[in-house]
Structure formats: structure tokens, C-alpha cells
Image 1 (cartoon, one colour):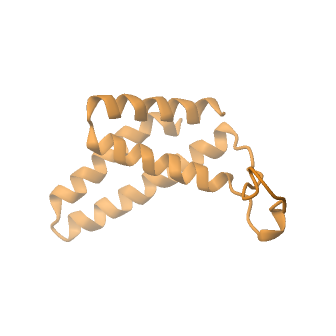
Image 2 (cartoon, one colour):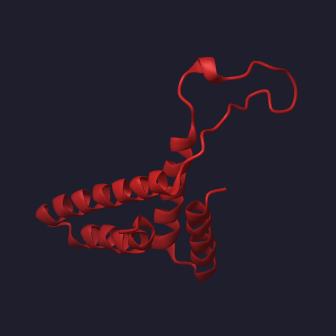
Length: 110
């Protein structure tokens, strides 16, 4: 497992223990985006077989830069949505998204 993904996963565990709903939500979402990025597209990549693991497909390995790019994309999406919500007068929702951004920023790198 990639070290950065492991750090995000450890942060999720800490957030679960702390019962931090915002952190749990954003870290789960980000880990889901990372896991989705490891999927290899196309049905031709699946190995037809029977028995245990029959439905499994190979996953691609992501570099630290790949994961940082996913995290930065998650941050950009939230910043954009926060700006739109702020414009619409939904300040509390915008603040929640900004709190999520603050949680993700340490994982984005420089």
C-alpha cells in the first residue's frame, strides 16, 4: 500500500475514534476516489475464472504524485462548490466544505 494512502487511512481511523463527522466524511470520500483511480477500465482486463476471487480484477498501483493529484482535485472541487454555495447564501454549507478542505490540505503536498 502506498505510504500516502496509508497516512490518509490512519487519519480516518483517528477521526473515527474522535467522532469527527466532517473528517470521517471527507477522508472516506477521498479514499474512495483513490480506490476508484486504481481500477483498470474495460471489461477486457478482467480475468475470467471460477471460485474464490472470480470477480476480482487487477488494480493499478498509484504513485504518491498520483494520490496527491487526486487529493488536490478533491480540494479544488470542494473550493469551487464552497464558492458557489457562498454565492447562494448557504454560508453554513460553504463553511463545512472549507473545513473539509482544511482536513485534506496536509495530504496535497506542495
